Length: 446
Image (cartoon, rainbow, N blue to C red; front, side):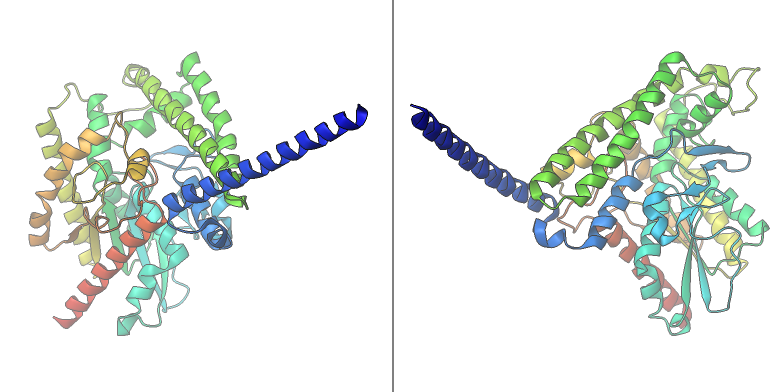
């Protein structure tokens, strides 16, 4: 009797073990397909590339505001900057938020250490900031500039003066401020367009003057500094603070996985946390709007230009486009007097329709039916594009880059706002480098 029971137990154990093994095989095969569909690479060989893993981690963490509850600080000239300090996932590149609140490997003003250095200043919002980091790590522009005989042996120094949410006239103001401090440049790049229409529209809806810095950023900081946040808003802020380390840990652990199944499970978990994080941010930003009237009151220590009426879409985007043209022209003129080449690029965005075909997988990443930016980009971008020829006729090197990602079959977006993954970043960087080099070649031949 006991022997029969023992045999049955061993038989059941063997069956369970076999089934678990088969389940693992099926899960691993399914996970390998999942990884292939997402990355177009074989999991085991690709995961051996530590630099690629680190790059994936940098990109994903870089697209989220992780680490601290509020990382911006109000600034008396620029509106706001990033809080100075280290950036853990970029520490190996010596990239940090410097004493001026910009992401860089250097403090400002940066003075040339020798005549062999070639200083490139980058201005704009978060796309420009991420471009700067991508360039520091990959040196695409430097390699392209070395095609020119006069720059063959130059060391290219990338200095970022870009921060998430910046829009004109912030780029113009920062350029003038840095020049006044003695910062020198050999070349300047301005990457913008999205924030000008998307964030000016949000200002307009909040009856904050559209030309003021992004209300999405400054209202929360002002509310915190005056202790005017509601209990509900503070509770939601704590929720955001709680999710951040969980999301950071999940993304980090996913990149350390040696099995495809592990990678898939952590991918699903991190996507869920990311969704919860973005929802919490949306709620927090919506709650901030309720605090706006108190910031316009006579008791407020901050002075924001109010906008007594909400402009129509035509009035708003016509005014935004005119300001955008004039500020870019002024940047060009200021730099031209110092014989510094200026290059202006309009950033691609998923919400402005081009010939790009989005896969179902990319649509889930790049599109949101509730995006606060989508309609502004669809409506506002044409107003900017109509002014491209006018800028060119005024001598500005401006490039309409909206279709630069169209030929790429792979996923290029990393979120449903405006940011690109490594494939998209590389394509955009090469486009910028090629156009700058071609223009410099053309100028030297004339």
